[in-house]
Length: 375
Image (cartoon, rainbow, N blue to C red):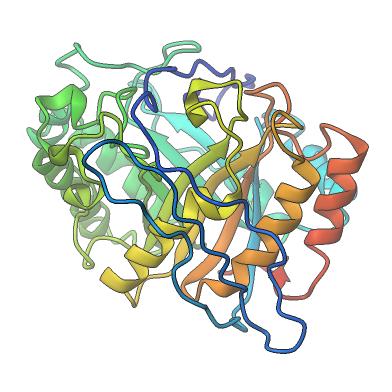
């Protein structure tokens, strides 16, 4: 997603400004997952649809094998724009709306030059019995628009060459003394075109992203901030869709990544972001979750940002039900963080009474945990 970054010291609403260029390439058509549970086997019904692909490409079978249902808990999480003065009430209100406490509360902040470390929002989340997750955007305060390409003061070279070390070190020191586990996501959706940390904005050099990620990680460890867990979080599909921009070309290594995250949304059939089609949960996430589990079997996975629009080519209530029915079949999936903001006009869980009822029902099973994954 594209966000306005929220510094701790102000209360602002995040406004969406998403590029519509990213998914203009041809995607393979895949089935809408339905009838997820076999009545007696506790397995995913592998409904396979091979569809016409672009010229020269092989058709892809969707869900090509039966998966076994897992018993692991999936921690519930949510992002909504935090109001600095009333965040505790916002958390209580959301819990009341959906009928269950969220295990993870997520928010965004930028790298303001005059900002060091402030723990008010962190304390509010921890006091609610949940774990904080921060998306840490290496941009200055820029209003509603993230910094894209073109500013050498905020590209990957500026991080690698140490221009921001004093700020990173100060933040890491604050984290080291905090005393609670925090999930930290720097460099999200690096495989798109929107951000100054993307490969696209850095001469198509994915290696620079890896070096910058490791550089930031190393500073945190040098400052003793071992309570900070690093989340690596690409978009589920790269844009531009060229070989140099492969998702795995950005992976910093198992020694630097604590959680593997992924971002994806169903924008509906009227949006170029979905290549003008309704996209079920499994169509968005199945390939990524399987591939990363095979590559990095020891790493927990999270859906770091996800949501669906209302009925724009399909049913949002069905989308929600099918998403939560599918989640237990991915053995490494440990958290799912709903993006509860109206970027597309209807991303919130209560965009309709029917959608809210579907979400409340879907998260009811004990397998969808409201317990903080970390103290």
